[in-house]
Amino acid sequence: MTEIRSKICGLKTAEDIQAAAEAGAAYIGFNFFPKSPRSVTVAEAAALAVEAPVGLCKVALVVNMDDTELDAIVAGVPLDMLQLHGHESPERVAELKARHGLPVMKVLGISEPADLARIAEYEQVADQILVDAKAPKGAVLPGGNGVTFDWSILAKKKYWQCPWMLAGGLTPENVGQAIRRTGARQVDVASGVESAPGQKDPDLIRAFVAAASGR
Ligand SMILES: O=C(O)c1ccccc1NCC(=O)[C@H](O)[C@H](O)COP(=O)(O)O
Image (cartoon, rainbow, N blue to C red; front, side):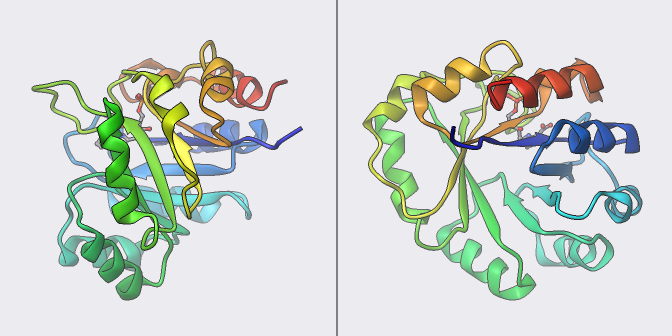
């Protein structure tokens, strides 16, 4: 059976990280978007990251961040990957990879088949692509809104040259179906494993990773 790798995004406590690690998640995400209920400071993320089990990929999620702020995050937190969740260009992706020496995952929002063309602009420069739902009009957050997109759009995808991950409204209940319908081998969740905005639920984290893994 194909191994499915899960990413749990927006972790704020040591208990969240323990639950993700014990459940078998492959990635954990620290959210540095100040308006998010999931955001952490550099000091908070650093304290969590140093205690995270070896082998868990620690990802920093940032949105259109400038160099000064991102330099402080990379200097202060032991990280394994950057996740760019704003309007970063392919050139900016390349620049940040070179500047920080970390793999970069670029997020692209999908709502119609034409959006798949944007992936071609990034697949040679990004290390991974996170295929997410577009934020609803007027949303405060560019991600983490718990909305799905039409997964059948991904049936029209070609082979992409870098690994990709599926996100957008995934939950323990729908992640199995999402994997079957899209062929995703990696899945990402934020709000679908929470009891309230920004409050992760260890039982939901375990249920999500188990469902993604077909257990
Ligand atoms: O989660 C947030 O608060 C957030 C804020 C700003 C930019 C991105 C954000 N989340 C990004 C993620 O990686 C989410 O996991 C992804 O958008 C899916 O979220 P959800 O639909 O809630 O699972």
